[in-house]
Length: 123
Image (cartoon, rainbow, N blue to C red; front, side, top):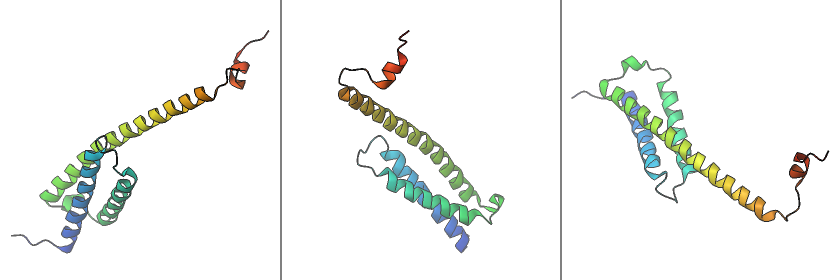
């Protein structure tokens, strides 16, 4: 059995933590209305920061095969996470726009707004 160095343990630890956070976020987006996306993002950002600091002095070719595979797996999951978060944010923006339009319509008193008045050619 190959003995892991403390650096190997740190690499495996940060990649595993990041993978767990991403897995939880990917599973919850769109499925769990009570999921705290803000807190998850804080955890994900911390893991990414830790990974950046840890990998600063490491040549990726020096990683063992298991670490390279884990790194590729995490990257693929991050790519999927990026798509899910973008879709979620677009949905949130769409709902916010619908609410804004509804409130604007409810507040209209039937008279012309300044924008409508300016758009009309009176000559």
